[in-house]
Amino acid sequence: MRKAPSGLSPVIALDRASGKPLHKQLYEGFCTAILARSLRPGQRVPSSRALALELRVSRIPVLNAYAQLLAEGYFEARSGSGTFVSRSLPDQGVSLECGDNTPPVVRSRPRQVSRRSALLRLYKPAPWANKWGAFIVGQLAFEHFPFPVWSSLLNRHVRNVRVNSLHYGDPMGSESFRATIAGYLRTARAVKCNASQIMIVSGSQQALDLCARVLLDSGDRLWIEEPGYWLARHAFVMAGCRLVPVPVDEEGLNVAEGIARSQKARAAFVTPSHQFPLGVTMSASRRLQLLDWAHRSGAWIIEDDYDNEYRYESMPIASLQGLDRNSRVIYIGTFSKTLFPSLRLGYIVIPPDLVDRFRAVRHAMDVYPPHLYQAVLDDFIGEGHFVRHIRKTRVLYSERRNILVDAIRKEFGASVEILGAEAGVHLVMTLPGGRRDRSISRQAAREDLWLWPLSSCYLEKPRQGFILGFGSSAPSEIPKAMTNLRTVIESAHPRSEE
Ligand SMILES: Cc1ncc(COP(=O)(O)O)c(C=O)c1O
Image (cartoon, rainbow, N blue to C red; front, side, top):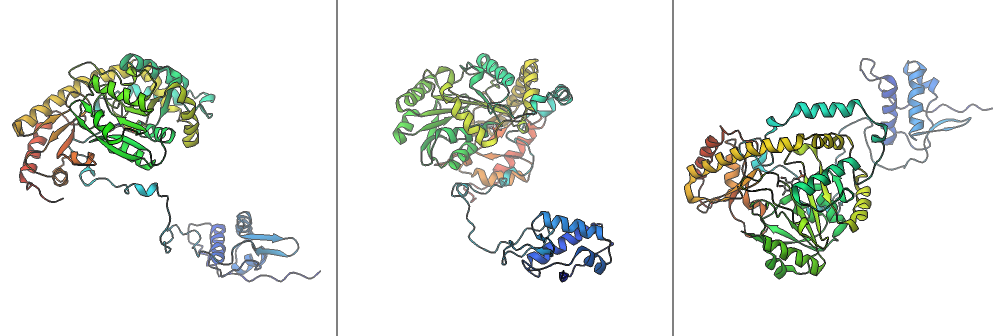
């Protein structure tokens, strides 16, 4: 039989001093030659023995490299004939350096992405929010979190892993945790629910995304509070909804105005217990009007009850869901404000007839919520630590809030309004005298003040002011930070450009 002629060897520079194994260098050398088309599809490659001789290496690294190239489809073996560059590789194609980790340069434009994703501005931290500072929103008194208890519960579950907790589970979440949450909501929030209606999610944001996917179609109109929560806006914009800003006044969302602007809207997003950001509690008459509108027009109400555990002058407000006689309200809650946001745990209370829809959509999204923190939090609540933590932090935040309110009054007197100080871990301070909140926020960031401009919460005519968080501000630092804020505001020119 005629012996098959040996193939040509590509130039492969082996570096014996480098830490990279020889078989890896050989593999990358062939890949690069193939992708750069210095070796063509169908071309014969040298036998492993010939190449080993030529490169003066043992045959083992060559055999290993060939095995890898065969497994990945760069080479093909033809019995009796030898080894070839795979004929199924395209003859023309991208030219890449194999093993080179730098991303390829994008030459072709435009590169098409979904219209949906292009509806959102690119994510980057706001210029006033790129470092930690006084009045930061969304941060809490973590130094008072019972970490020893949390760690011991975490250890308990890490050490005693039950096999069934490793399997896929119900898209709604752990049965035991859902029962615990249902019990808590019935008692603390007058939510009408049982465990079968509770779905565990990774915070309010996933809940909003799910609501949009289940309840709304692209092009549907949705009432959104004006001013309102920007991340809720993002979730609904992503779903292709048309946002209808509905003004909030001292009674909460102005339902009559919503009806005037879009009676046929498919849904309304509201924060009735503590409106974000203004802090208004929706009055009973507005609640009944909203429920009545939803019932008559077949619309959904998405109730975001994000920080109602913290009320300083009255008992926590009962939920809107608890007043609903027609199962029109989808109720959302989170542990981001009571425990810590990186926990990424929240829940939805779903009307009974929609549970199967939500379950199916959730299954298609991320299958099932991770088990570990559900189990830990279930014990944390069940053993009374959650309620103890809320009781303790309520006193703490109440003190911080009082100090903040006093500091604002001391520095600004009656020239500013304080809104929404009755609950939660932030309040709003309006800005006097035609000054622009965004430019002041940027300037304040240089003084280690973290000020969220109120105007960023508006879609229409913005009011100027700041959302001031007091959850993580040490009481002793609040008065000094407020004096700094006054200096920054006074040095800002009225109507300075943004
Ligand atoms: C109105 C509102 N809803 C919900 C949340 C919490 O969101 P998540 O549960 O996604 O952390 C926040 C946090 O700032 C909020 O302001």
